[in-house]
Length: 314
Image (tube, rainbow, N blue to C red; front, side, top):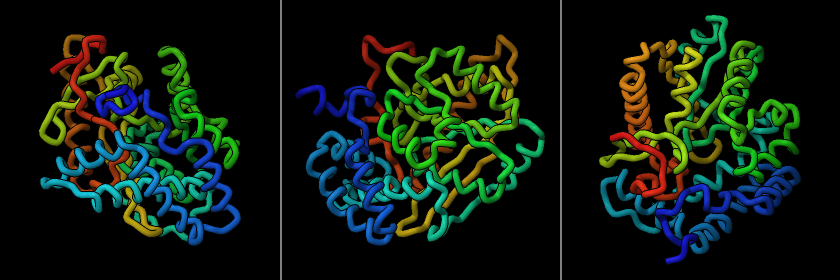
């Protein structure tokens, strides 16, 4: 089997889920025709991914079979891909601040307010469960808060380009995750000191970064240590965020007050990181079971450790 068709290949080697042409087409159609008519495009997009992106289809069926507790069929897979395509379309409106027409239920905002009212920035940890762009609706509730996104610009060229075209002001606040580690930490630290909400995705571990294999849906899966090492180094409050797609124009934005700050003695640091990461993995599993069609990691999330991968811990 070729590398491109191998479901266990590193997720970074797979082409971006919404390529530049696809995002351009969706953006143009959405801007000229509106969201209702643009949703007609979701059917051909779903069919394209279902028939042409074989590794993603296999990964979808494998995940859904695991999380649903039964063999997943083509209808389940098509529903999964359709949900993903829907969130891609809605990016056009959410990134440009067009929240009208969306029914967004916000939960757990009190805990986030409590963190923000401490006068410090908050590290917001998310995942590829749902649409993180829904977080933009927070600007309606807390216009005084700046959201800074940590994004690998080089690995996400289509999304980076889309963001720059739709909202240049927001694009200018992106913290490039492709920099060296010290530069990333210093930029995050500076943003937090200015009271910003800094967002990081904490569910994908690249082969060449430190990771922990933690129980997730019945089998150990690799989770990156870097977000938690940054949080422990800076000692800042941590909240979790999930922008869950419920179908149609409905979303649920869930905030979870996760930690008021990680403070470990040197000798307890590894054990402390392991415990907090295990809590995150358990919470992510709980949310994945509740909203299975929002899982947008279309690759083998449990991929076995490879001989050339970074050190992992059981």
